[in-house]
Image (cartoon, rainbow, N blue to C red; front, side, top):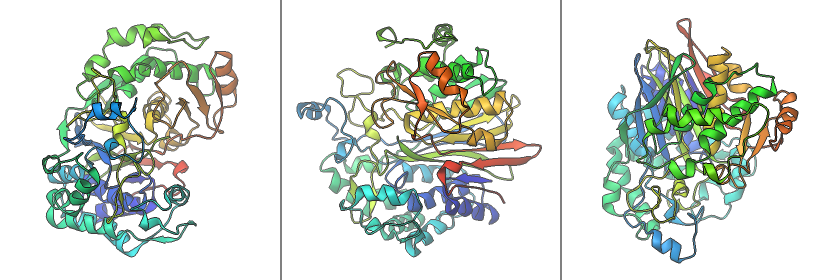
Amino acid sequence: MVCTIDALASRAGVRILGSGGNAADAAIAANAVLAVTAQHMCGLGGDLLALVHRGDGPPVCLNASGRSGSGADPERLSAEGHQSMPRRGDVRVVTVPGCVDGWAALHNRFGSMPLAEVLSPAITLAEGGFEASPHLVPMAAGIGGLHGAQDFEGLVRTGQVVRRPGVARVLRALAEGGRDAVYLGAYGDELLAVGTGEFSDDDLRRPQADWVEPLGSRVWGHDVWTMPPNSQGYLTLASALIAEGLDLPREDDPLRVHLLIEAMRQAGHDRPGVLHEHADGATLLAPERLGPRRNAIDPDRRAVLGDAWHDGDTMYECVVDGDGMAVSLIQSNADGFGSHVTLPDLGIFLHNRGLGFSLEPGHPARYGPGRRPPHTLAPALVTRPDGSLRSVLGTMGGDAQPQVVLQMLVRLLVDGAPPGHVVGGGRWVLRGGGGGFDTWVDPDDVEVLLEAHTPEPWARGLTARGHRAGVAPANYGHAHCIEVVDGGLAGAADPRALIGEAAGA
């Protein structure tokens, strides 16, 4: 089974499975299609993180989040008056994109069919064209006239055919020559050119993908796995560990949503100060750290965190094959079309993942050469106590990713809900004052936004407990879930994605 935000990608993955490929092959194939059709969410200029389960035991963990260039200079940014990292229009917010290295590492370790065959569906769509989705069209309106946006010029309606010749060129280079043909080829040449000293040849020779130890915790009778820092995945586990010690009522009771929100606020309020690439995930999940936070939760009122506690766009996909291999993969530009800096001749947009860096002197996540920024990407995977796979799940959504995954885990592991409700049930998200990446700047000032189909008592119950809460349009994530049930698979792609699909072979 394959679940993605685009039926074209899901069907490409299923095609690979039907041709004898495994879950890793299918995940790359689906992601490569999305790199063509969903440039507003992911692509060759973004990063990639993945968990791979091989039938039993803990998963293996791939961190293909790129590092800042050797020319990174925080003092120069500060001298120019920047108090935080620029968001768009500045190449210094771009780290060396890790997507291609991520695909190469995943295929080198687990791939079972030639990479050219895996990438073939994406190349065909890039060269021959695809119909623009109802998500891509309005997003493309915001990049009109941008240098390098020629693939989307004149895109005004859903169903219009879009071609991506530059993307096809890079995919062919990867299929024929591997990662070096990309990073040391036309792609790398353009990255050096637009970088104007930010990147060096050595930066591009250095692989951006590393196999690392996954971060896991036993909650609700299962082992839940995610990415270690520099990912914010620890927040999924921390909030779940806090929530496990609370008496959660049924789903429609506003007390339940209050307790889950408070568990997330207690877990996440200090993220800006503690999340960096060298942070110790186990320490962040230690009982002596989380116990006082759980004890601070009042069932009748919203906590004031204060000084004492001192709409991101991404795509998530999951794949399970017939031999028990599972892949939970997330890949992203960070924020919509990313930095709005492009590889212009190729029509590839570069992410703005460097917005996670700090410019504060002495901060462990300070911008500087060769560093990985704090990352919102946080895929998840659930195993039973015997090590067998229970589920792969995850979502897009910037800072909201652990919030959505927490809600999915409660429905899956506490309520025993099927994937359709795990994915489709009404959600809440916490929103700060900006665009989906600033939730924890002032954790006492976050709003609770509710989807229209959440239980009606939620808004009243949250307001009565001191939350600023209400039904509002927001980015509630495009989540997917595949569950192993009775020797088979059940899965759901998020209806919020409009054209997503859960497809089986």
